[in-house]
Length: 270
Image (cartoon, rainbow, N blue to C red):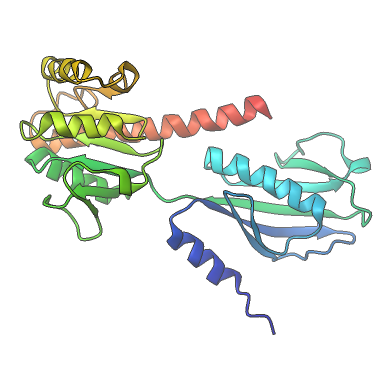
């Protein structure tokens, strides 16, 4: 009996923190090597862990996985013999892939992307930063905080302003809410990070002054241009809780807008 258990593979992949897809055979018609219910994990590197069928099915699954990870959207695909394909999208919206396999079977698969929630880095230990951390935790974001900062035990901790060990990517966010304590050092670390969205809780005049200092110190203009300050949507927030909500609302807007743009980009290039 095989020791392979797809649910153990899914659990290990989840714990790795890397995005992946679960591909499930939903239905088959005629002769196919994979049967309904078969599952596999498909990694972002294109490795298929599990059995889904022949080479034609695997190629389709890899293409669909790339699109699903880009868009974050679950999708249904069908792999059909070439002579049965009329259009590349069926009437129910399923994407169709042509198969040249001699078996002549049709395989229908569900591609479900899994991605860890974005990482939200929050600099500062202030009433606004603490409120932001509390709101973000309720919204399901992963959190990264300075070692001395207040926050949940589940938050990732980093020393000083050193963010390199966090593995930040373009879909993550950095918020500077230091309000007078190490403003310049924290802002530099935020703007030098790979996160594409950086904002600062500060007046426009203050952030412009800090950016001018960073420019004088040699920080590239393209890094400085990524800063959004004042942070947050204009909801006429007054107290720390309201300001934190405005900041988190802006992050949610950015996240969902970026997700939609990735989906539109995939459609444009399909």
